[in-house]
Image (cartoon, rainbow, N blue to C red):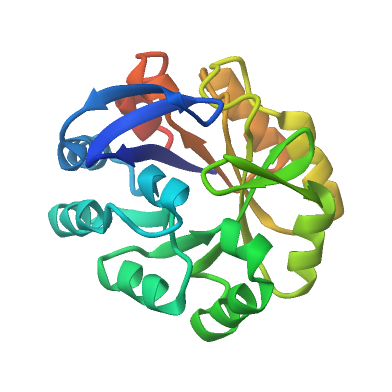
Length: 237
């Protein structure tokens, strides 16, 4: 299973939120590039970068951070937040991302998302499926749709999606354990490469997600709060 440290960006700084609430913002490092280098130095190969400003404002804001990280490291980066057009998508790939996560756009502009999937391929386009109460949330989790998460994912799987990042927003930043039951339900319904996100706080959590069949796990706050070290996570790679 892939271990993918998270790097969330607000105002060019590395931050974490709790349950996606921007009022809970905590700055952990003023230099995201330094954080990315530390990730790479500990043997990890992947990085999950989220432009939280972009997600909220519905446009990419922190593209320069992605450019700096990709120039300074050899990490395979997946990027999300504010990608709303093909021009945005092209810019993100040009800035060094290996994969791009489409969350809000997959809800509000399905034809465009399917065009991306067709033109760029299922290896490069990730479906962002973040939920609260089993309903898909969008726009940096500031809006909740009426779309059921299981139906949302299975529908897109039938249309060619391979990779899915799923966060149970109620678990995000809480360090109380992941939604393993939700992930098992998703994997029972859809043959996808599922990347779990939210609530991970221990090696036991990671082992549970691996046993559930997740292809990858995103680890964020547990690293920044010292619950899990990059060194021990690197040993899993």
